Length: 313
Figure 1 (tube, one colour):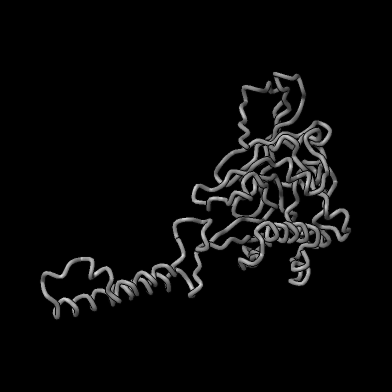
Figure 2 (cartoon, helix red, strand yellow; figure 1 turned 30 degrees about the vertical axis):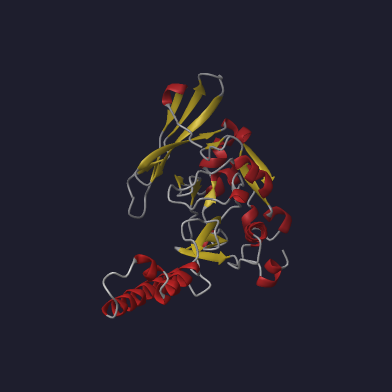
């Protein structure tokens, strides 16, 4: 879902000085200039904060009652940015005075709602997360935030656009909202050990056919008709081998097998991955339910379930 910001929608009442970074490679640069504004269409007063996302400038909406909390959270004067996922966050400082503060990025919407489900050992809290009601991750007004379970989050996400080179979904998956971290995949296979093996078999049989045909031609009369060639043992052998090759043009033919992948970032550039069974004996919708379980378990516990737990689904 696209959310376009335009200054023409707001009247600026007051402008405030930005933070000035004092350490690191960005020392001396300004960040997080903010403004008190009124939305022209509704008359609602709010704050708009200027943020950096790599080389781009983005704008975040904040309720008046939360601006002091956001600016001086944990007595740190945090400097916020927009991460790759599109959320507003900052990374806490690590020093002797704040040794109990995690260096894990702190998200503005979690600070405002005082809910850090992913960082607690409380199982019930870990199952809950904060939802941006209108789908705009930069709209952190309190009226746009709510604490819900993952099922409600998924319902509010709408249909996520797929990559242009993504695999065509089978009929039973069309319209399905995939769980977080889960993607669909399909690959060629052959009962003889892979598509390449099958193609090599066909190529070999054709070569054999050509060699036999040349040998037969040298010992036969020039007036042999084409019907004799079609009934030759070599041609029959090639046809038999061709029938063993799965249809590689259709994803719904036996030449394709379907499965799901899980992938999540765990910090430090590392990722945690899981792949569902590729067995054609397991129904596709059961694989999806297993993938859904893996996603929800990971979000609740921060780790993948065991194979035995997955197999029970």
